Image 1 (cartoon, rainbow, N blue to C red):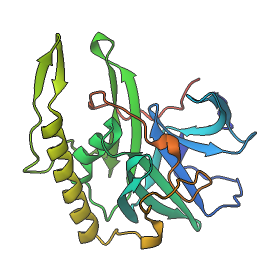
Image 2: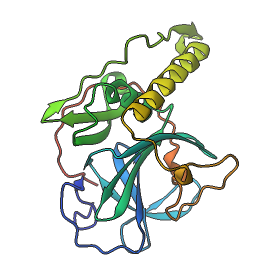
Image 3: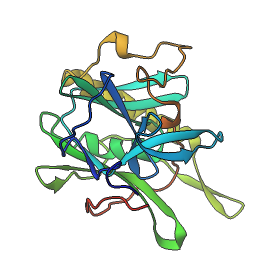
Length: 236
């Protein structure tokens, strides 16, 4: 990977690039933070639809959350974190019910939202060739503990054809509980965004920077786990 086009860290390093937009989107996907950019400004990749897209990839982001919300858009619910740097809104999005979202739910209630934090997505092969996907958050140089808030409903598994399947009813109940807790956390910390930032029902998703990119709704049903915070530059 060309390190001139893809730095290891977003916001923790200075940038000489000028921008013509007042908003940037970073999507948690493929074990990294991915920004869609114009042709010639990043690395080319062919997506699932067969289209060539251009991206910059970052290992981590340093930010103080200024706004946070669950956006109910056309491509499913997204958790969105917003901060501002030099007048530019930087937004980090992840699927509400994907591995990155579940990992965030385990940690966000244990964060001090008045402080800066470092967020790092990961995805790697673990035991039995199982992909391990999630997010690691650090504050004050310490890893934030991964524990759901008190009262979070348990989710059981059942065996079917030799495989263990999650109880979807219980999983939905847990997600509803966590969403309610997150909305209260947002309200209590004055992190509610302006109404104009919220996706309205049936609204088209604009990939030019107004709404979350369509590919941000990735499906990551793998198990989350702890991961050492080694912030090396990504390799091709």
